[in-house]
Length: 202
Image (tube, rainbow, N blue to C red; front, side):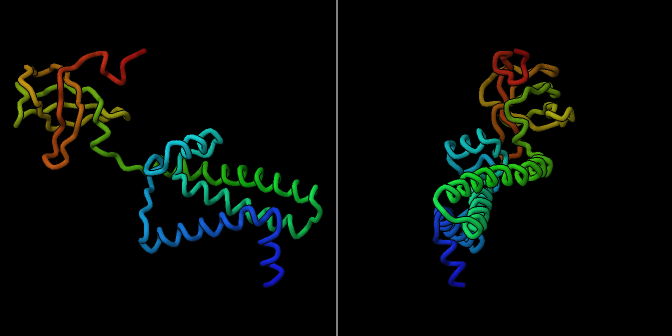
């Protein structure tokens, strides 16, 4: 046990040992409810960390998962290398190898996780916000109206729509969905402006 502790606290492993302690503490708090964990890859992580990881090709999954993988792999490789080699030049090479292996190993793990996260994402009514719809009722008011909206996958749905103003919406006219009311389970719409259509050709 003493040799293990010595190796964990020796260069270059010590650089990752303290990070590993922080990572373990974070996940213990997350598991036992001390802190919240947002499983959304674009959730609570700062934009800087997410953007940096994305630039390394490690985006698409929660930053906490990616950083944890990087630290664990780097720590393990540096621990093994520190035991097998000695001398500052060799250990400096071990540090470089640990960083390279951490990036490569994390990337290999992140790729299938990213695909699984995208494939398992449940469709949401909020996905319709920002899309155009075709009014199917004779009018749309503050308490009545229906429209047909087409999802990104090509499927269509008949949804309840409402408006906040006094605009005239005839059957067959196009409107733009700008918000979803989860309590009333309807969408707020406004007159369609081609410049506001996110799917317009550029």
